[in-house]
Image (tube, rainbow, N blue to C red; front, side):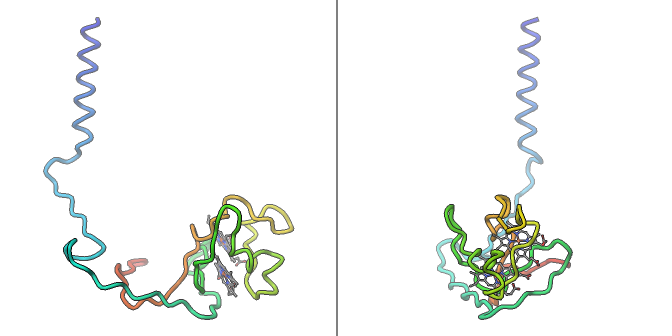
Length: 141
Ligand code: HEC
Ligand code: HEC
């Protein structure tokens, strides 16, 4: 019985290993985002992103899309402070002429932000004018 168990264990281990290797001999073609340049080449720097100076809301492409950020997005979000709230919190938004936090982001009728929506740039991305995009946008193609 013990021998049988040992044999079973060995067989299991072998099948486990071969499973991990996947299709043997198939090349994995991973193309670098930097293109065909060699690692030793010094690639010219990408163009600096140019954000709209005074952005207004960008049209959404589908329902429930996190709206794109129509301005720069390097406002600090740390454990203690979320700078996005200095314009988008419910009490500051009207004065800053910014859209207040979505109702789905708050837990009460005073606009207290919930924990799930704290890291704004996890979902909202800034839209910038970059002269040389590295990767073409394939969305909707
Ligand atoms: C100095 C004020 C200010 C700060 C700070 C700020 N915003 Fe804005 N934001 C605005 C204004 C003004 C608009 C344009 C009006 C609008 O659509 O809300 C805007 C628009 C947006 C929109 C588009 C809203 C829509 O309905 O399309 C999003 C999303 C957004 N901001 C997210 C952020 C995030 C995330 C941060 C932090 C990284 C941030 N904002 C920081 C002022 C600010
Ligand atoms: C988990 C993803 C997620 C995070 C994190 C998040 N949002 Fe959103 N946000 C969304 C989605 C999805 C929508 C559109 C649907 C909705 O209104 O709930 C939205 C909508 C908005 C709107 C437009 C509201 C309106 O009435 O049109 C603003 C402004 C906004 N978010 C700001 C922020 C700010 C500021 C933060 C950080 C404090 C943040 N969001 C964090 C997903 C997110």
